Amino acid sequence: MLPLERQKKMLDLLTVKKVLKMNELTKELDISVDTLRRDIHLLVGQGKIEKIYGGIKLADRFGESSMEDRMVNHLEEKEQIARKCSEFIQDGDCIYIDSGSTTYQIAKYIKHKKQLTVITGSIPVIQELMNSEIELIIIGGKIRKEEQSVVAFDYIFNFHELNVRKAFICCSGITIERGISDYNLEEAVTRKKMIDLSQEVIVAADNTKFGKDVTVSIAPLDRIDTIVTDANIDRSFQAKFKKTGMNLVIADS
Image (cartoon, rainbow, N blue to C red; front, side, top):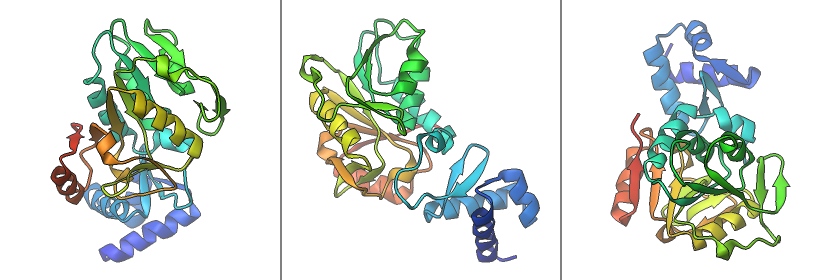
């Protein structure tokens, strides 16, 4: 079977079954794991499928995917990014952790930090750190159930009394021309506020976010200090971002 035929069959199978595991695909297509990985890498690059834990699914072309899906999609890459982000955090810091599936992973790697204060609107981050010695501050506002977050849009919160050293921000899209963007206005407003307040802004984003400019603009690249991503980022993006002078950090695989 030719590569194009294999890839078309893979997409056809995914239209019938929402998620396919790697062992299912190797049997169904009668190919090796290495061949399957090459096909998957190509289809992911074309934006047709997404990798999830242990398998693949069709790419979500209709806006923001659910928090539950994003918690397992590209999990390995998000954990790599989170570990790298944790290296930016020092004992005694006051940091902001955004409400996103990648930034949530950061919480797992900072529990040993001393005298750390974490400001967040992410309910999963709060649950992760609740029994640690980290001081937690939750922003006030409306709960977005689908995102499992609290947003401060049009609500009273004394943001300007906070001394935030580092903000770890999520986004759904990154381009050189437009910077970072997201699907939800309320999340974007909160992120803009935290970017304005923070001494250092670090965007945590897996490789699938690059080249996308989605609904709501958050900030241009000149408002961002560092972007941390995974090793699967397309090399063409690496070269383009290097020309801008942007500090693009690639997490170890």
